[in-house]
Image (cartoon, rainbow, N blue to C red; front, side, top):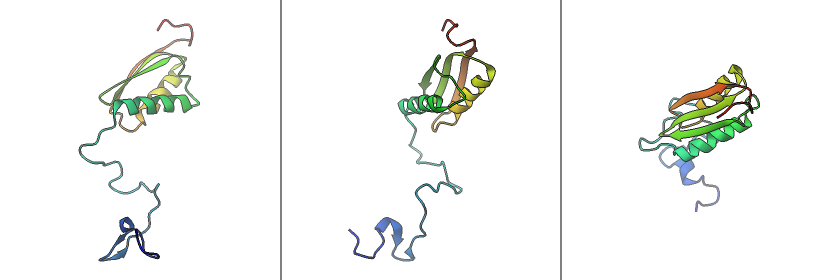
Length: 116
């Protein structure tokens, strides 16, 4: 435990004094997005994150879609109302951390009338 008035060890370097303060949400810089070599986002987490992203996107009715994930590759399957929503759904899945590729198996059809 640091003594009163001292910065925690992870915030200081005794040779050079306190490190510059960075906000926890500051992700800018030349190495943003470059994690450890042995790190990969698990398929289960990608599945959850894609489903949440599609659910939260106000431009996509995802009620007739299914999401499949294997080795970081996402497959979107099912019926979607129009090409605009199709593009939004694919873009939405691409933005999720850990996604390596998105395979679009969506069929433009009035939702609820298709046979998927």
